[in-house]
Amino acid sequence: MADGPLVTFYRMVPDGNLPIRADRSALGVLPTAAFQYCEALTTASAFGWYVCSPIDFHVQWDGTDLIWTRDSGATWSPVTRVQYPGLPEAFDDKAPEDIKDYAPPFLSTVLSGLLPGALQIWTGYLVRTRRDWSLLVRPPANLPRSVGYEAYEGIMETDRWFYPLFVNLRITATDRPIFFDSGKPLVQVQPLRRETYNEADLRTAAFRHGLDEFRDADWADYRKSVVERTHSGMVRPGRYASAVRKRAHHGNDDGAGK
Image (tube, rainbow, N blue to C red; front, side):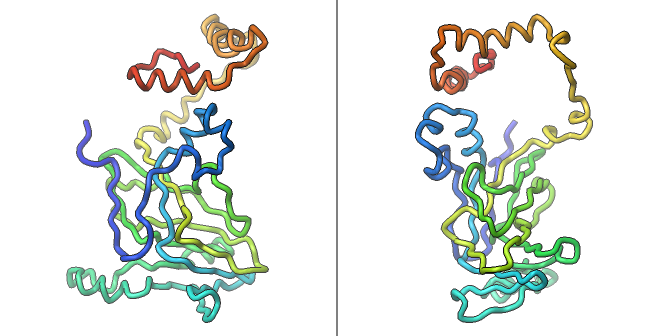
């Protein structure tokens, strides 16, 4: 049973866009045919929320050191443990006495000793999830990605770990500054029930070795999914999408989407 919002975002900085539901069209970059007919693609695109950087900034890596600027290169500073502008003072003004001086850093290189070019970026938010729900933090689904960095994916148990929502990146370009745009999604966060990545369940994967191990039910499902769809030689676009939407409308799971 639900016990409050599935996800609650706690904003700690005054700037930037609010998290928004991810978009079925991947912010309009999906081709029209894919948006109209490919339910698998659009469902994945819309799963979760987009979270942006709270401010525009550039980062540059020379293969050894990271530097950053928020004024388009007029001034550069080394990235070690960079505080969000103005946050330490605002944080200390509101925080209990024993929590003062513990404002989270905006940029840091906490993993640089293990991962060359590693950069951690804080989104300006903390987050909680409903009991037994976690958050997968990942690159935005089906959006074009920068060739200048790679984002690591991580699962945070945010129902019992009240922690800053951040992303770890590996800067890959050494020949130019990398721009982080506060108007574009930095990450996509997706809710997961903790049981979906339970190690004991993940070890139960089964395998069928060859066609001889297909059962009658498997062949029946194959007939329904593939043969009947193509029997006339005409593949009707969007059949899967139509079946999924119909099932969602009626609130049942009768296998119509198979």
